[in-house]
Length: 57
Image (cartoon, rainbow, N blue to C red; front, top):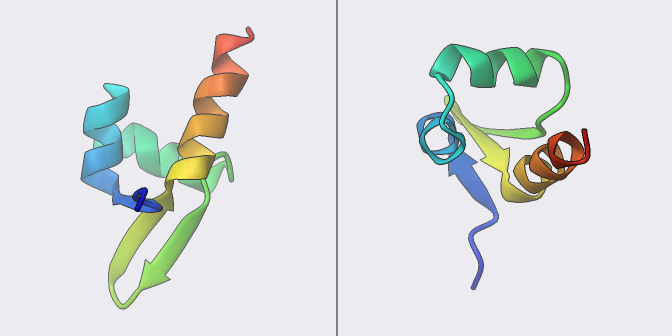
């Protein structure tokens, strides 16, 4: 089964960005999040969409 969500730190590492940059993208609604308890998880589909949008530029 494909992983549907990743942590903020895992996303930052995978994208080569800092944690602050990931939170900035979340505030700009460019990455979808899911809150489970205190954890913030990012949807892998929104991360792929972010990469696709920026690859076209």
